[in-house]
Length: 192
Image (cartoon, rainbow, N blue to C red; front, top):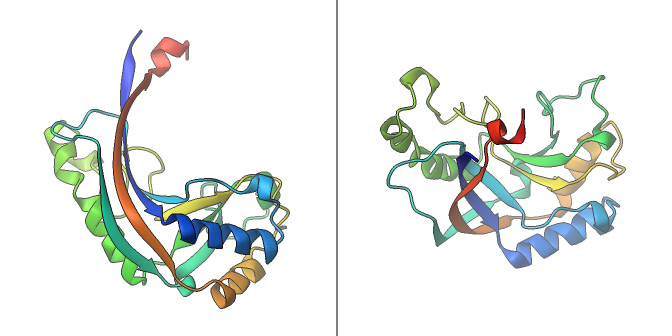
């Protein structure tokens, strides 16, 4: 059986912050607790190949994001804009980090650390990740965290929920950055 290497760079929300965000989503926006995700994080980087010289790591960081810098989005291609063919209640919902946020530049710094490793791994230059494009996963990179599963009951218009979050949540603090490296069965070995 062939295996594929998977690499993730993950920026984790602090545990107390996660509890505060979950309480807000549950009590203020009425999202059922069973729909809320665990281990809130921003995926800073993702690759589906081995990156030479990269080892798993965990380190403390400090990234503060004001509530005013978050936007609700449907977790679907183009989900940052309302689309009549996409029913948000049938999709996961995420919070997207606004590009004008100071934290966006910090996420970009963490992300840029992986780019030279793609070159060393032989990823063709025209296909390598940039601050806004991904060589793997969704083509257009947008820092976000997925907050809830389908069945959340937010309805088609997410704007009022975003306004409530920006008015009532306060800053969120991310305190841990991790690089995770692991192997998964390749799609060839799964008969696809």
